[in-house]
Length: 259
Image (tube, rainbow, N blue to C red):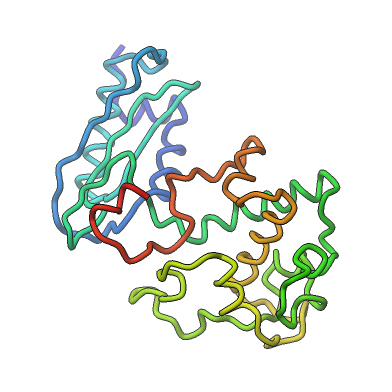
């Protein structure tokens, strides 16, 4: 019995997966330049899985048409029961240099990393290695900001630390220099996140990247290794190194894929 592409998505549950994945990896969807889609075959030896080859072709056609109609720029991958059914990249990763998207493109996932960081913090709490009511100083004794002995891990998690917001007034469309200039996380904390408090901790919500940069440093201090490697030790919460940890560093086309 022939099954329409849309039905394949509905029956297999791939529709929701596709929407979620496209939301995460879509990059610069407003770009108007056209670039050919690049098909990458599944690795040899991987099980074919379901749907059948004809349905996989229909799935690919459905996704290709959607990507073309909506001018999608990014990479879409669909897996089912461990089998890679579809992987294809569309459009441009960098418009000025006309660099096409590929499987090795580093995406600007930016604040999506906060989800992983929060999960890592709560996993450490569950394992008895971290106290949400402890202050920053407990885990980062060298931290010099006023928040050190006044702000708790819990307040960092829910953005009520009261710390100064270094991003205030920045225009994301024009970039944020202190995220795009090469520097270590220690230098970022020292230069931008170690000042006096702007508000009393726990009294006011303010979405502040400083909170999660410090949480990342706390995770590193407890694990004694970088945050992305810490995540890979805990199944279900792995920050893949092929994804950027935030804003892209100003760079040349040769390094867009290599970092």
